[in-house]
Image 1 (spheres, rainbow, N blue to C red):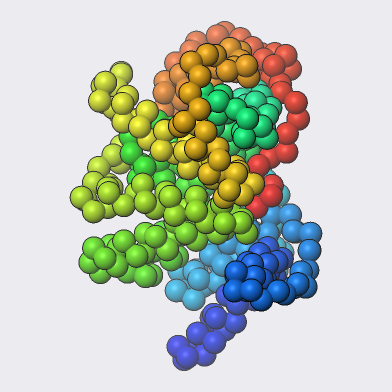
Image 2: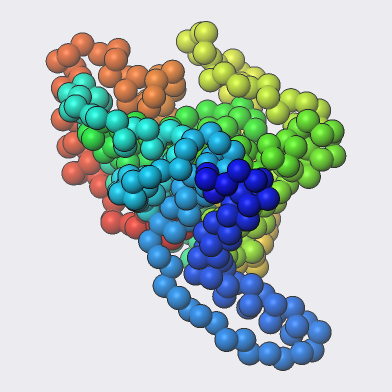
Length: 412
């Protein structure tokens, strides 16, 4: 593609490369979904058809390394980078082990130059990476795994649960997926630092967001910015008028849902987030909260706290569709959560995990101006207290680690 001087020939190689990459993703991840959905559609018209499904095992990390490869193809086509001549360098870029199974989704323009340059072991960077690994491990095994036990129990028995139990279960899943995914990202980014490589930041304290637009600037940043740069902007972004801006917004949210999995629950989750985003877009307030909360003061205002709470409620409602096995089960969950009211403490309520969630949010708020929350807190402590904090966190991990749970994003 780089060697071609005619745009027509460049486009042939470009679309060939895109189709090959998406073809693998389509066959392994989406073929059974589409063929089964088509069979269900025919069944609604009285036409019975038993389709042949592939039932292939999903290759580990396929969604992530497919997008790595696509970013490389697009950047070469747009002449942002030159085509890599060394196969081993490209192979390391696509399959760099810390980010292979759950991201962050790297860009060729960001990671390839780091792989190619000569690196000397950086002690300070490595130590910073170890701190981030420790914090990510705490979020995974203490926060996410404990929340998972409660969330799994509630979602399995949703048809018989009351509203407060279901609300608590939804909140547990909200913190499970955050602790799980952001914990993995911290571990991956920290591990890369041991090799002198800085990966893209993937989370920036999303549960401190004051509106849904800010949330999506802070959650799974590498995916959100990937869709923004490679789909939203090429479609015209917000430069082509309000209606096309709305169309483009719905496209990227639906694609985000579809990227996560071949299930109507993920697609509806994307649609729901687009609907939450729409009012901000219509009134031009989607870029209102760009700076981190209370960036120039010690505490947020009451209004900001209410905005955070409102955003968290919307996000948590959407997470129900993300977690539920089917649309019907998600509908039952929501219906009972808002109708079967019993004013008593849920049987699954656990003060220990509630305490750790509060500790997590406190650390994230104190360290909100840092790369990750734990780092911000450490910077405020004298050296003896920093070492005490390290050992305390390690002890907490050993004592309060939940039952082992697979990383949620391994399935994508």
